[in-house]
Length: 208
Image (tube, rainbow, N blue to C red; front, side, top):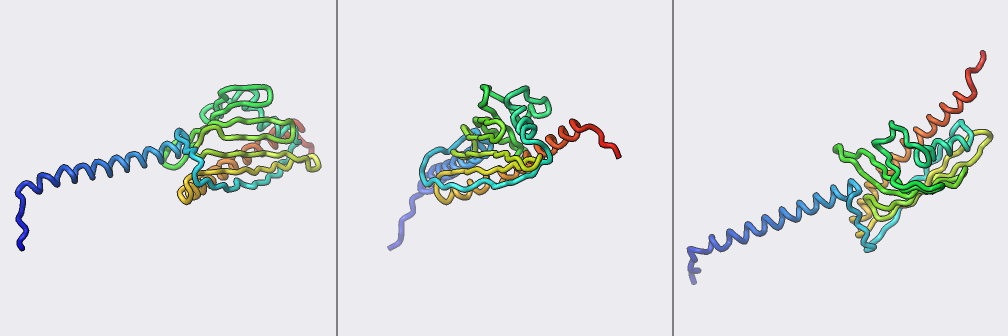
């Protein structure tokens, strides 16, 4: 039997096609917004579903400086006045005697700036602990442990990161962990450079 054609069929299908395009466009826009939100730390997916955890570090650095001095280099920008050179990367929101609430800003791919909010607790002179309050993943805890080693300091870093949503969370957690470790490694290098500079300056010029 021949199928009778309906002259209005194309007109009925057109709105449906437009709806599908709009829905797909809306989904893509939502996905892009979620990616930008989580990537910049403005949106945190803290659902508790399918949570996976992964280590950060460990990183170990030997610093040719006394432990007290290395601790002061780490704690100074938080517990004291934040240097102007760090003002675009660090903002202390609230300051106590041994703990602060601090906002950290890190430039990531494409010129985006990732912003995290963390508590930072100081136990002089042996450790500094960070805990994420808001950022690209629901959980990050970190510790910096300072050990004396014959007039030098061994600075040890380790932490843990957690993300939700099963395989998607494991992938995203891996992306964030790689960038996080790289940022910490750069910070540790800066800490060593500054601590060793201060140590050399305190000793004064050496005679030949």
